[in-house]
Length: 137
Ligand code: GCU
Image (cartoon, rainbow, N blue to C red; front, side):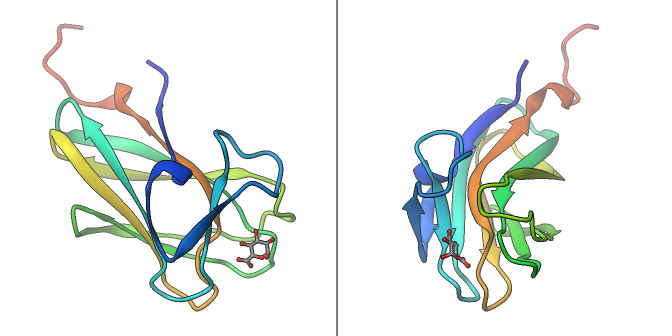
């Protein structure tokens, strides 16, 4: 199955605004994190079963400075991802992180770790096809 998309503009936003002034985003816009440490976007995702899944972030960073995000799943540390410059705010690229999810709803929060805030966040995608499961081969 194709990865499942979760649009940033539909997520819970802590210090950030939905904008649509830089072309190339999917959905109806993207989140412009406030330029402060601690600004965040939190996505609610639903996993049919517990497992390790590939999480893909689609973002743009028109500066030359990395804008890392700390990732938590239901409050537990899931790692920090770097989001280096992409060359332009209209150049959207992806970064991957493997995350462990429990069955049911998981809150994936991405929080800026520097005073520059996060990159512009288009969406995350989860590839549920890689999960260990109980179906016959
Ligand atoms: C510019 C850009 C925004 C971006 C911001 C930033 O204002 O237009 O989309 O979020 O820079 O540096 O965070």
